[in-house]
Length: 106
Image 1: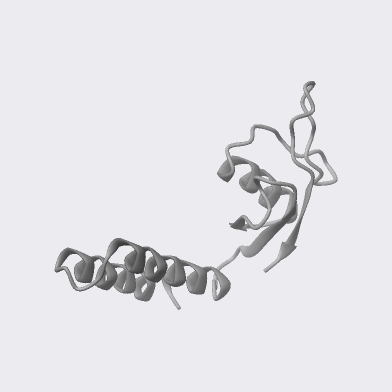
Image 2 (image 1 turned 30 degrees about the vertical axis):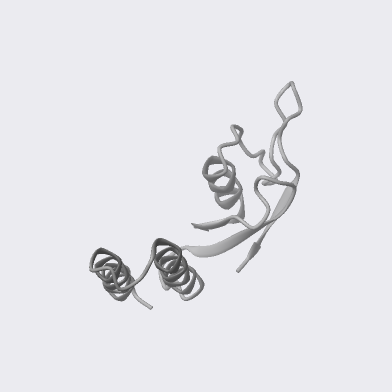
């Protein structure tokens, strides 16, 4: 699914919600399904990665050019501050509150 198709599908879901044809829960499921399909079929210069590990990052899916970049995007998307070292491992701040996780191509 390309970006335009994804946007059209989301617009269709929103239109049905606005017209009272579906409820909020159904609209959320449909929009999430569109996004998941788009992410798993992503066709660009970057790859799709999924985090596997501790909460709150476990299951987070991001698009990134490399594993280290994916780790940083996972942390940012999860609201966890931090950076990756040269091996792509998350650096732990002094208080040690970084989740442990790996990223895998999705």
